Image (cartoon, rainbow, N blue to C red; front, side):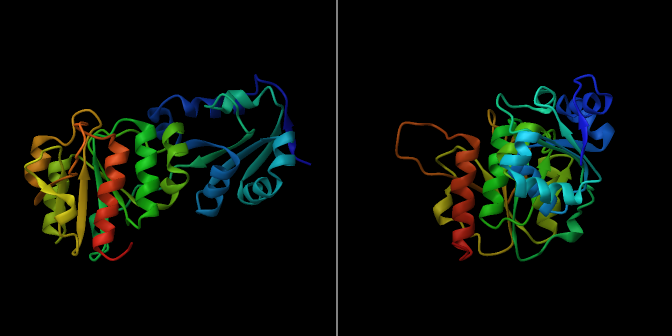
Length: 268
């Protein structure tokens, strides 16, 4: 029988609940908090180290197979009362399934890049929901890794985790000081770099040549790529638009660009 936690004043729960507050707390603890039966199971199946697993009695009944998988790899497991669950939740209607996970090692370097594959680079992307959706799309379309250039949002924050639907557990993430230096280093490694811009004078993405090793750069939701990043890339590409809209949401634009990128490589 699992050890039960019935008090909202439980110190272990209170400490883990603080992981929802900020990226700084997560970095300091070396942990992040994952919520939801499917997402927690994805973490377990993706090799993420799970330090602590929490679930309510009703969650064990409803998501039994998920909970068993998570508990089988967790270092500690607890059954929590229904009134304790909201402390660990970032949603209005929690499923009652949570796990405290170890932050994966951020040791990916340019030396580990697969020279014949496609990658995505995000410069200063701040919206966690957009960010998560972009990671989910990138994994679905076969992108081999994502560069985070400059101050991007935390990939292990609750909204980014939910948006990624587990992609953050499986996609290699490369942390870079800024976009221009990343573009320069990637170019030196033999990758063609493509800057996404909202500019009718740029090359339409439908005619861009992605057949070789390629990296697509996407910018901040409000301001796009910095000018220095654009000029550091080999190519400027844009999405031709026939309607009156001047631009697209960052995640929608990324989906279109990545589709074209991977279609050109015969992946679609």
